Length: 128
Image 1 (tube, helix red, strand yellow):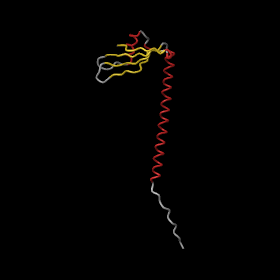
Image 2 (tube, helix red, strand yellow):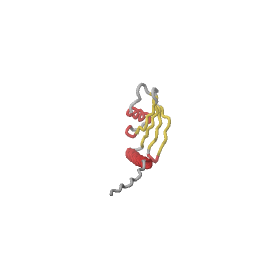
Image 3 (tube, one colour):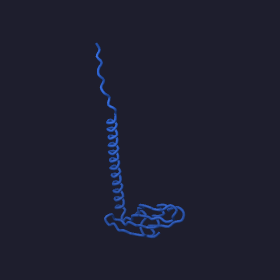
């Protein structure tokens, strides 16, 4: 494992680690990557959050992004806040998609009404 970059983020009580791993065969599991990171950086495994593993088909290298937190309480709080933010964004996207869908349906209905043939009213037949 090669550490490419370390960025300290004091407001979030963590470090963002960018590393490159080399492997034989299949990409290593998240647990194995976390163990290797913990050993390399002398950190507790439970304080590491593996964010991404980017690998290219056929290559035996992968880029790893991980966060190493300073304390467990902050880790739980920040991850929870992140999940809430993602849920909020998803709800907003769903609401926007629903509005767009409703607008499209309304346009289609208006177009159908405008293109519908207009029937002339029939003159009433007089019965004597």
